[in-house]
Image (tube, rainbow over all chains, first blue to last red; front, side, top):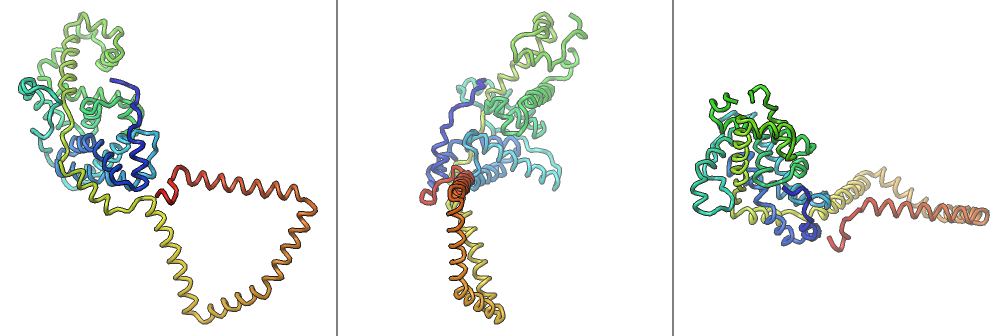
Length: 191
Length: 167
């Protein structure tokens, strides 16, 4: 995974959007909508709530565009807003009621693979998704950002507001929990 | 290799990231550790294959509809300031008009300013003239310094904000 941050292709759009150009902001929304919605869905595990939070995060990004620091990647900034909104919602949700999380079933697709590969991988992917869904929101977000969105630990640290070293440790713990869920107990005991 | 000699998993995976280390050397000869690494590799392969779901097709339109209803953030701040200023002015004027005593004081104040203002201005000018003739250079330097620091301060406060015409 590349550690170097890409250039800032959104800078011109951000400046134009700050001057009140709606098409520039629309272009920004289009460029980040998938990771924003993806993270929200991984954390909230409900499509309607994820769409609502994604919408709210993008609106807040617009409202606070004058506070955004151009030197930081725009997508990471919006992801951080999304994450905070999701965590707020999760906190409120646990206060209201504790309930079984719905399995995401076919909601989350695999990457671009051929039809045959997809058919072969469907079963494993589904069990992986189901195992991931049982993890905590913290574990899900670090796995989603690292493996699904292919972010570096440095980028994840920016989104989560902590040190990159912490991300490595969190990633290890999350992966281990996932591995244990995916591995039958006798094999684990054999080690 | 006996199981109790196997390294801690965190150490093993840290070395896997780095590509070398004694734990990895151990794993190369240990069946149990090799199995763990293989399992890890397969799981990572599956994880890397996962992708973000497509957002609802209406997401961009919904966001842009809400954005259209919002004023430009910079402009909203300016309008908030103007609204506060106007409210204060209207409040002040309302107080004056509703209160005879305050209106009387205001009238007296204006009249005394008109009468005594000229004398006051002449006094100030004569003082400034005396100061200029005795320490002109020092006064000019101080004034220039004050002007420059004020301008720099204003520029720093404004930052990269677009000009009012741009906004």
